[in-house]
Structure formats: C-alpha cells, structure tokens
Image (cartoon, rainbow, N blue to C red):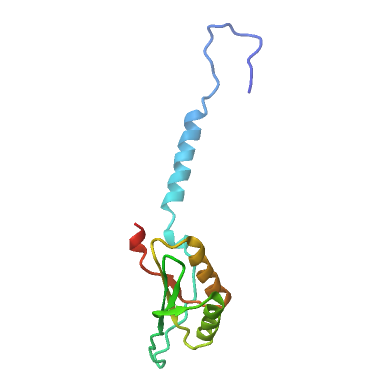
Length: 139
C-alpha cells in the first residue's frame, strides 16, 4: 500500500491505477484455460487383459445362502447347523476352480449381526464372488 504525502491538496485527482478489474480478467482467463483443456490429458491409461478366444466360457456354480428371520442359515435350501459347518462349506467352495458365486439373501426381519457373521465367514475363507440379493424388500 502506498500513501501520498506532501504536495497536493485534497481536491487533486488520484493517479493510482485500480488493479481489481485486471485481476478479475486474469482469473476469468485462467478458468477458461483450465476448462478448455482437452479431457484426454486427464485420462489414466490402463493395460487391460485381452480375452483369450481359446478358453471356453464356463459359468461358475451359484450357491444361494438364505438367512431366515431367526438366524437360521440355509445353504441351497439345506439348513446349516452352526457357523463352523458354514466355515467348512466356504473352505471347500473356495478351493474350487472356477470359484462359485455366492448369493446371500437375508430376510427383511433378520438381525444385522447374523448377516455380518455370514459375510465375515465368507471373507475369512477367501470367497471372491459374493453378492446380496433381494435388496428390493428393504426399500
């Protein structure tokens, strides 16, 4: 900041340049340059694997786990007596190639704790293809 001292009265015109419009124009130009940069300069290049035409397209097995309102676990319609048995089922399925898909269908009234125990058991046993089905009942 500067201050005029000495000669000149109060009625003399101010000779300092107003830089606010200059800064506004420069900011607008900077924003225009950023917006008009090509989108491809922001792209992330990934080397995706190519599909092998010689490998047969094998659909993995689907295992449906239902969790009833009282915590009863059904493995493809068969009741599972306890979580240790469920662990053994998951270990056996995780060893298969290709690994089967696990679809978990919880009842709308089941406690969240039962669902978490099943999910944690699947994760501990390296089940990779897992999903929740029947979510429309919670809407």
